[in-house]
Amino acid sequence: MSFYVTTPIYYVNAAPHLGHAYTTIAADVLARHHRQRGEDVFFLTGTDEHGEPVADAARALGIGPQELADRNAERFKELLPRLGASNDFFIRTTDPRHEAVVRAVLGKVRERGYVYEGTYEGWYCPRCADFKTESEVAAENTCPIHHIELTREREQNYFFALSAFQERLERLYERQPQLVAPRSRFNEALAFIRSGLRDVPLTRKRLLWGVAVPWDSQHVFYVWFDALLNYYSALTFAREEGEELLSRMWPPAVHLIAKDILRFHAVYWPALLMAAELPLPRRIFVHGYLLMEGEKMSKSLGNVLDPNAVIERYGADALRFYLLREVPFGADGSVSTAAFETRYERELANELGNLAGRTLAMIERYCDGVVPTAQPDSALAAEIGELGDEVAALLDRTDLTAALEAIWERVRRLNRYVEEQAPWQLARSGERRAQLERALASLALGLRCVAVALLPYLPDSMERLLDALGVQERSLDQCSFKRQGEPLGARIARVPALFPKHERAL
Ligand code: ME8
Image 1 (spheres, rainbow, N blue to C red):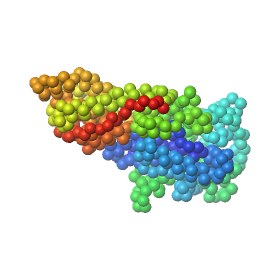
Image 2 (tube, rainbow, N blue to C red):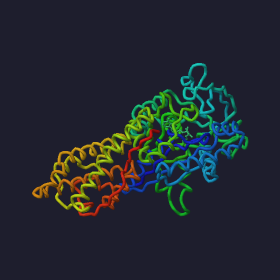
Image 3 (cartoon, rainbow, N blue to C red):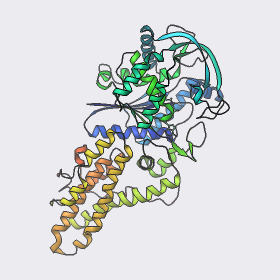
Image 4 (tube, protein in one colour):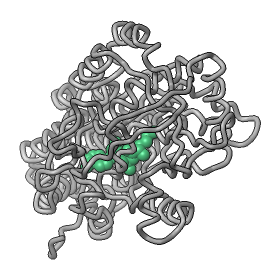
């Protein structure tokens, strides 16, 4: 079973911000979870380096576009280990190997009769690198996303015959109701298709920062066609020669995107793949926007929270947890430093951190640091249940927030169990030794279940916790309470607080 997951490739017109980190973290959670299921996983991210957004930003800085791309691609790359991202490759669209694939695939699309020459006229946003339909144009001819004035563009272009795919796309949406999620986005994309597709420019003449069109040296490919093909091209060169990534990984299991680029992924992309006779992605999941002060947080609007500040003070795990816990995955949601600090303190430090700290400390104190091999509590076993299956089912629906909530319910349950059992009281009387051992064995098992399920979300801290607990296995099977074995009988190690409290605010 293969699982190929992608993020959008980010524009290098500016440095990465929290919005980019968000998609990357979500993709990483899915990649890590599927690895725990023993699947063959490939996780791709990278940078989109051509087109007007990049050329304009470079011009404003007085440098060349390649120089800007090199500078900012490095910043996107550097952010990945800081986020704890376990991507298998990082693609840059100025890589000549990518450019060659773009030329080959789009050349094939032309050979198959889906490219023709014509004149285009319409409203264009240089930040979106996108033509707006009449209904999308905001008041006074502005872009609804960037609030800048749109320009009226008229040019001689090569066109992609998107309209030829109208019926095939409608049929695809009928056949594959899971293609786009959440449902509201599926409906939105389908409504766009049903409203009647028009052909779209495939190349641009004025703009010279792009992949040269092989059949006409006056043109470069429109950046979106170049960009979308990254998902395919990467697999042709991301690994050593002889490794068959394409046949192993294609088609993608899930593309993660935000709603700003829905139309490109849910309409143009399947049409392009059909035109090139390539299998289609299984799923496109559209998450919402992180909002700060009620606006989409974006580099061009300037209201940006630097993920680096959070990571430096609290670590990547805290940022990962906060974003996926605070904002229901698929919906828009506000983020703030105050809400971050509250959740960190309440949930990571007081709930999970204390559960782990107390469990380890009690095993140390009452059992000389060895997890008792007692028969665990069957009532608790029923409540922890098949956590791994539950999480897997929710993540198969790309519901990262619900999966985290399902795990968190167990964290809370285990904390209540500590209070109910009050092992410190049981320890006072020798007669209740069996009950004490059962309680501590149950807590250690329960902690193993939640820590393994949380590994994709909190890879660094849960790795440390599982090591301390004496658990070697990391597979999802370890989230079943019924499965005994590790860490019963293991010698535990004490670790410093997983989520230390901080005096200073962000
Ligand atoms: O669109 N909240 O690049 P981009 C949540 N190069 N996610 C956000 C966000 C926010 N406030 N801001 C950005 C492009 N994102 C193209 C993509 S793909 C073939 C080409 C995330 O740098 C989200 O994933 O503008 C969004 O779709 C993406 O960054 C846009 O990144």
